[in-house]
Length: 297
Image (cartoon, rainbow, N blue to C red; front, top):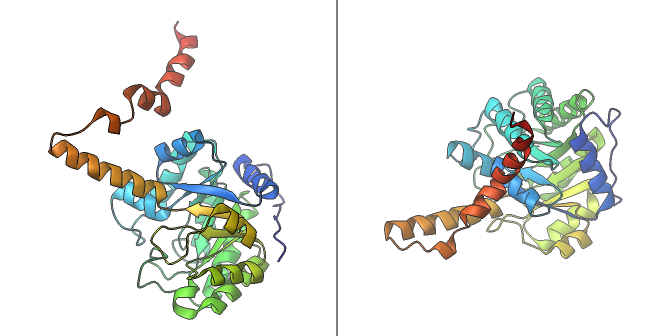
């Protein structure tokens, strides 16, 4: 199907949203490593990527040290988004979960995350409290409730320029056909980006691309239900965004566990660590010192 970029009537108020639209118009596939805090977002930008995605799973682990089971509140998510937006100029997607209530809550969630700096907000059709899309026990709300959430998110876009990423988790409990039908309706309701979570084979991924209109996102979770494909394969299928929700968090956790074990055994090697000079530079010490030179008086 033809993938199109929707243009909001008030485009230009949110520069990140405008940048994300432009990015999606120009590239067949945009690779989005997911950040979990301000520092990870800063490093993603330094690595030369064009966008990022605030993973709810990773943010919950980083901020409160707890699983992604709807435990982070709306206020905590807004604060987290604000911190990320102040650390990077990249356009990014914020995970708005189920919207934290009814349709009116969805409107508040979308507007609040847009004002905090998000270029796009993801709203999903899971039962609250939600679960990670690749863990057991998740369920989705009835179609009417799901459609109300997306309609409310689109209505919020009229006041705050932001892209709406509509996600369905219906594949797990109701099959791929139900998931695709929901996704098609999400597009008809006005969602900018469509995300069918957890397809279980390459054939299912291909079917999603063939039958779902709009801009499409693939979720590349190592160890999850969905096959991990190359960027070229995803682009060839028709995906527009490839998100990597846990790659960075998993890498950091692995390195931390190994380093802590080495520290306990008193065997930490300098070669395993980033140099203190590079740490300072990447965090922004040198840029701060340079900027402060103009204020010596």
